[in-house]
Length: 181
Image 1 (cartoon, rainbow, N blue to C red):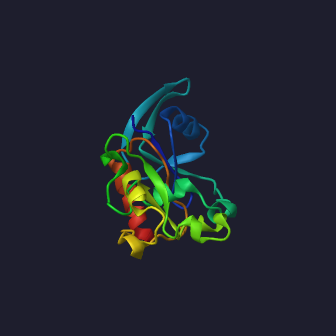
Image 2 (image 1 turned 45 degrees about the horizontal axis):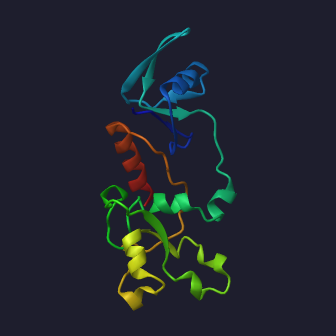
Image 3 (image 1 turned 180 degrees about the vertical axis):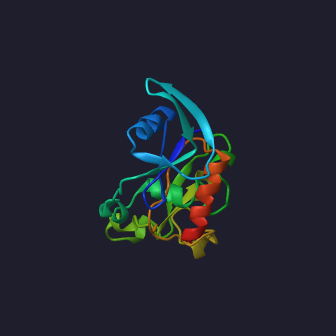
């Protein structure tokens, strides 16, 4: 079931919430509906029938902690690479039975004096287990396997919401993502 997309006060995607939580925020005046969006549900409560829009905007500013952007995070790599193997181009949903998505170090960990130095956004990509095993402990030129996209450190916030989006929410997120590139 689709949920309500919440934007921060700068109109950037922040999170997804349930209809009930959206109704609570609307009643408490913590959010307002994004102008022009459709109503996706009606919530019945003691306050009456509350129309629930597909997208709401927070009234208060929420600062993103700086430490989040500095520390290496596996989930940000997955979101950056869109659950797609960076060698063969297959999405997570296209994998065969027994295959999984893994993190691959472009420059293998074994070539680093300090193994922790290998975990950087510029050195790690998402790879299916088949490609990761094929690449093994080699550099890209040694096995002829190069990432489809050059891995970069995420700048800004990557939305890692799981679940269903309405078409309207997807269009809004796509529009925001195109504007950020």
